[in-house]
Image (tube, rainbow, N blue to C red; front, side, top):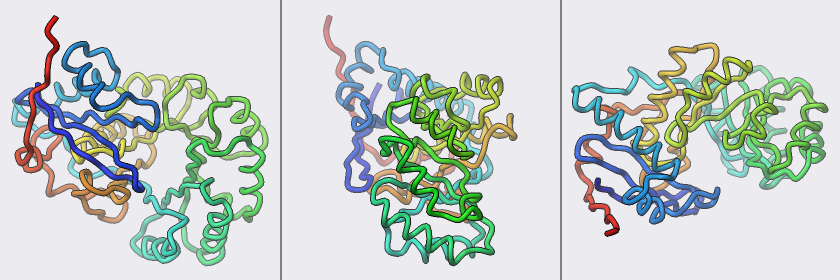
Length: 316
C-alpha cells in the first residue's frame, strides 16, 4: 500500500489528507482533527499496522470498489452531477450580487452559515428578503452547533417575515451536544432540522440526515431512513477531488434507487477550498467534472502526476 499526502485550505485552516493506492485502486483518507478525528500520521500508522479506525476501514472499502471498477475498465461516475445547493457566505460583501447572479442562472437552493456574526447575517438575509420577493428559491441554514440554546435561534428567525421563513428548507446542526435544546426548538417551531450525521443520540430528533460517503457507508442509514421516514442529503467531506467524486457517485447511486428519499446535495463545495480539491467548475446547480472523468471514481491524470510513498509497517 502506498500513499500521497496533500493539503487543503478551508477558510484559512490547513487540513492534511492522503490518497491511498494498492497499485490498482485509489481512495482518500481525510481526517478533520478539528472535529475530533485522529491526525493523518496516526491514521497512516493504523492503516499500516492495525486497520482498526473507522475512517481507515472506510477508505479501504472505497479503494476496493475503485480497484474492481478499474480492473473491469468501468467508470463509477454518473453521466451528470446530482443537483446541489450553492453555498454562499453571508459575511461576504458580495453575497447579495452573488445571489442575484445565481438566481439569473436558475439556482433555486442556497446554503448559508449562521451564528458566526448574527447581526451581519441578519442584515444580509433581510436584504435578500427585501429584494427577491418574486423569485422562487429556498435556503438552508447551517449553524455548525454554534448556538448554546434554542432562544437566540428563535429570536433570529422571528426577525423575518413569514413569507421569508417559508423559504427555509431546513436548519442544520443548530445546537451543540444538548438533545434537550433540539427538542425545545422543535416544539417551538415548524422548521425541519438536519444533522451532519455523527451521533445516534440526535438521529430521532432530526428530519434530514446529512451523509458523507467517504466517511461512512450510507446504505445502513438508507434502510433506517426508509423505516423512520427521514430524508437524506449527500455532501462531500471537503476533501480531494477523488473524494468529492466518490461522494457524488455514491450519492447519485442512492438517489437513483430511492428518488423520494434523497434531496438536493452539497457537491459544489470546491469553491470553499484552496489547494487540492479545486479542479472543478460549476454548471448551474451541478458540478462540472468532465475534465476528471475516467475509470473507477476518475481523476486518472491527477493521480498519475503524484509521487507515492510506501507505508511503514512496524516489525513485531
